[in-house]
Length: 277
Image 1 (tube, rainbow, N blue to C red):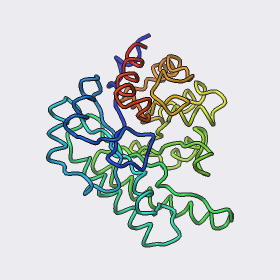
Image 2: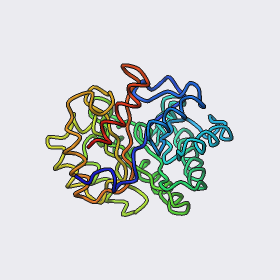
Image 3: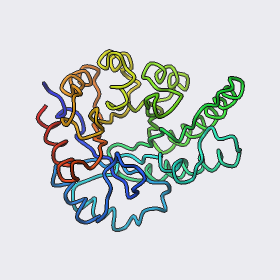
Image 4: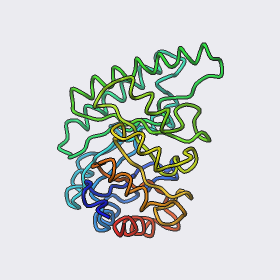
């Protein structure tokens, strides 16, 4: 199997916030980023609520020292911390969400990273039960994403929309629906983010779903069925890598897992397992 060597490499999801238990938390930048770099990772996905959350001088220095690059800003904490979304009933809240994302797009677009992504998942919001109102919400979402995609095009950034399982959201829960949605925007700067944990719940055939999505896949999260690092559960990652190779996916594979049984085991176990495929 050719696998990861023809892709950009392995990345890791990290955050400074304890609000997301399924992401590695950074407690000491110098030590944690050193351990991440030594484990072999090359890309970092950072989950924050605002650009201002980070003191970028020290953070960038630690990235450089450990041959790491920031490839993605994940936006779930914007919703978690600020309780806003792109389909919020309040106009000012929707505008705040769009403004926050535009700022993130411009920031990561100004960097020299080999891959520049903004990940949107929970921030898209939830649909109301009332169909007419839900249709209005979809219009708000379309308008917001259209503006954001325009900004992404200017700054050469890709917005990746994560497909999240039906136990956590009520809209765009499988890859087929995700493909139908992103296709309407017809933009190279708007792709799908697929996640093995979510696919394991809502896809009848993961390999077939990936094949059908093909060129619409712009980002890949790796997490086992227990939300642990790849190899700690039952998902068939060799088959998933084989199919990603078949569809010519060439970007990062990004491990998104909780720090269990402990942070060191999660960091090294996931990297070693995926590297051996």
